[in-house]
Image (cartoon, rainbow, N blue to C red; front, top):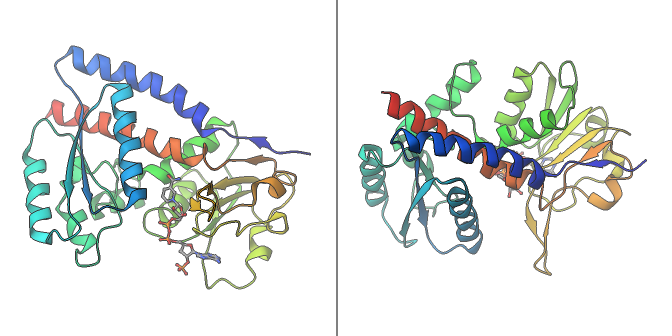
Length: 284
Ligand code: NAP
């Protein structure tokens, strides 16, 4: 049996067509959704992510504004920029591309973003609301993962979801969102004993470790759903996930590719959040 491939690229295309219509409707009533992107330093991966996000904004009709700073920028300059964006009525969403240079406190930057413009869903207020099931901006990658599983027609209720990774931006929230969908959730991380014994129990395995080809067929129960969040650059310059795609697709029931899997859905959820922010701010 070869796994069914869940294409994030295809799903994203369908959702983005619907989002473009929503933007057109908002523009017709005088609201033009705007996303401000703050980029610090010259990391090529960050530059490429930002370019991808701006291109996606343009495709659905969202205005994007780029604020670039050298990696030597001091924290107060960055915070002043964010405060100005909080007050700017043309800006509905604010995204600070992570990671930031070490001398800047990431939490301080995130906490300065107005929660109603925090379209990445990283502000503690949005994280807390998500935890207790209140309406909030959901973090884009975890939201994209759940949306992919649902769009593929996979039933989540009662399923055992195993998450590899416990970061604040992927692992922890993705487990929370599956819990909300009535899955039974197990978290694993770098200190977990006998990872394979746990991952083999998963009906749905979410892999977000950032380790190229960490997961092989020995980690996967036959027929399981395998969602690969990892993005790793190999020495030959190619991108690969955390899952050995060729080997695991012979065991899994469903699998996502890298690239073309979770990545496009992450950006799509960012567009969704920005449109929601514009709608809500315009209604105030
Ligand atoms: P992170 O902050 O480095 O967290 C990695 C997590 O994986 C940690 O919790 C770590 O455990 C765990 N881990 C590392 N090695 C492991 C191992 N051998 N066995 C079990 N667990 C292990 O990374 P992140 O920000 O969550 O991102 C994870 C991956 O997703 C990266 O490749 C990143 O590029 C990718 N990503 C993709 C998207 C997308 O849109 N496609 C978005 C965001 C991130 P400890 O906590 O014990 O250290």
